[in-house]
Length: 267
Image (cartoon, rainbow, N blue to C red; front, side, top):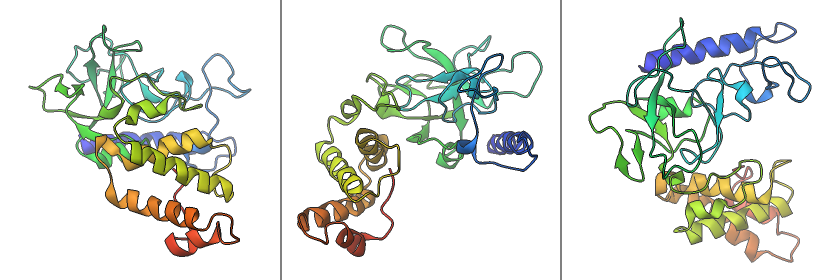
């Protein structure tokens, strides 16, 4: 399965490299204009090229025609409908074509907050497969809902973010309400908020990133799959404590970098 995923990714990257107007190769997904077939989005022609599980902003980016924002993950990701595939089985292609590297999952409609409650989730063997999709998935494991396995007899694993389940989806553009995903991690939330304040005050925060989204993404890295990454917490805390220690001095921005590292992480 892993070889199949890598071949599909390579094929997708080859398509991207051949689709530029000047013929130059490019595999930088973030640099491309993403639009929709038969219409224009932001004045650009549509290109569908992203695989199930890759991050997206619009349906038109996804080969499966779905860019979902729901409580399966705290970000938008490409998917497709299961079609005729029963839940717990591999998603089949529409008509002729290569099989989709994904599993049809069905969540309880009465509890799942955003339709559709059935869709294709990205298959994986380990976290390297999920990382290869370019999205911050929390883990690679058997599909589950609120801690309970959906298909105990199915050996397949999927890229999934369990901490998002049971919460309203967080709009990745505004990141409003993200704190609810981490209600049990008050220290981690406040540490990330303070860290983002340091980045912003010292003009180190990437342009266009809001303080709310910075803190959300920082906390997502600090508490993957509901467990605190102690090394990441310590590295971020170093900047926060040093910044607070030099407030109202000329060293407030330089000392944290001198002491904790010249390239603070961009969440």
